Image (tube, rainbow, N blue to C red; front, side, top):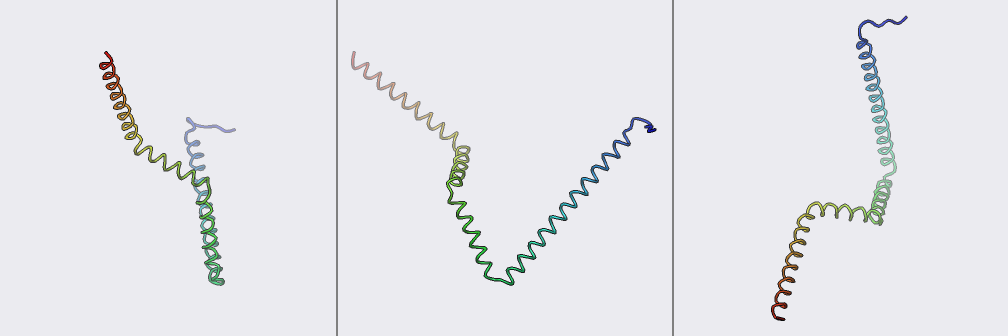
Amino acid sequence: MNQVHGNGKSSKQARHAHRESAAEESIRHRVGNARDIVENVRDQAEAAFRDKPYLVPAAACALGVGIGMLLGSRITRFLVFTAVGAVLTDLFGGELRRMGRDFVDDLQLRLAEGTDETDDNAT
């Protein structure tokens, strides 16, 4: 039979500590695997570029073409212009709204003055 003395907090704390240590160990293992993969890819790339030096310009060309296609696409242009518009709206939106409001108010005053003058001349 399992008998727990007290309120059982010590066993809960022990289970929680065990879970944390298992999670930390799992993360450390994954980080180690990722580092090994990166080192292997780096070593293979260095060996390939050393053995076949013509791959360096070919890889640079492929990268350049890929970036050029990305920047030349309509979707990318749409996203860039949308982002620039959002930034400009945040920076200057309040000032532009104020200028527009002042212009409309001034225009309304001028129109009101113009109608008052024509009414005075008509009588």
